[in-house]
Image (cartoon, rainbow, N blue to C red; front, top):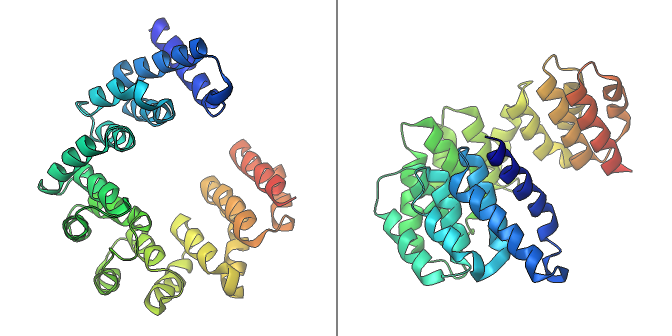
Length: 277
């Protein structure tokens, strides 16, 4: 257990230094790669394995063996991270593996594969990729619909079927998925704007995100967003702080949050205020 913690600490420290890799000596870079590779292969937490693979992408072809091992991981998110990393190192092999996913049943992994292939320039198998995403968006599994909808903004507009997205927006029962669909359609689309207005009327996280999208052009949305700084839920208050700074570039509504009872809210507010200054 102690050795595992040391590997995690070393890997996470390596990530912050990797951006300066061009100026680092080869020995240090090799140690970083080794630490990240061990986390990617052996850490019991899938999220950390996937994060390590994402960091290894900066190490180029020398990290290829870690990605090759990652595509055999038991966790779908780790396999997807490995394939994304492999795209930049061994494109043909990665594309072959991703292509195979398009023929599989709708799953988190096949959704990620469709997104990755559609986002290539030029897009590879765009019709098949979109067909799988469309199937995911009508899946009875809400988590699969959410995964597909949440990734739509990564799909180039030329690949998206806008008419289909509008139809799904009207039929979708989940508010969070409707938000993702509306964001994918964009605030220039009347159907999307209508949906965002409706979503913004609820005082929750989805409502906050919808209000933030409308805020640059809608005073009512700005008022709703500011009002969420008094919400009873700390996560909503913290989110409102970040969104107000990002979309309204205001610090005045955030001052009271600097004295909030929750340290998480105080931290979010402080970061938000600093970003506005």
